[in-house]
Image (cartoon, rainbow, N blue to C red):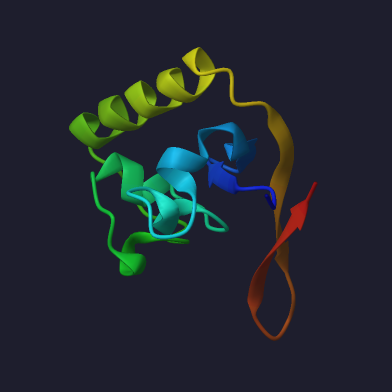
Length: 98
């Protein structure tokens, strides 16, 4: 299998061992290869909810996101990298440091 990675609040988690959840055509596959912070906080599996940066979360959304992060830690998904926001004169871009 290839590695399955999900970013949450800029931390990149390796979720490969849960291929049954994150693999192709599985329930959470939409999260793989994306920053899922906003999607998890809003309980969305829509592609439009991925990679949404600089979005303000309300109190309830922050609590839900915290619960997801706790689940990632409980499941012992290793943090294997971090997203780095790079600002240039032309546009904002996000790169991955794994």
